[in-house]
Image (cartoon, rainbow, N blue to C red):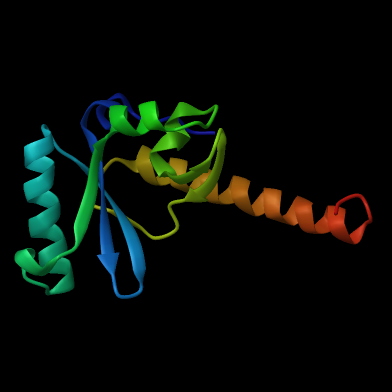
Length: 133
């Protein structure tokens, strides 16, 4: 399993973008919260063709914010958490937009997707074998 780079731990920000098709979690490396706000607004406007004033961007959070709010044992995975039920994660990033050249960010997301797929497969196997409910 991979680990987030020191650069990612120091500079990562996530901002959520409401699209007609659902929420996209955008990730970027920026030196400050204000720089991240400007970057997300400009980059997503350019990508989407929607004027910056018309974008629905919300929940700008740093790596530290995300780790502090998350509940996963693996702190690196907390950056992909989106919903909780107490101490259980019930929502994860499903539509990421990686605006960062750090390969460890994508590697961790790939690790998460593999873990979630394995858990779902095991759950289905348990149900069909009579061990689950």
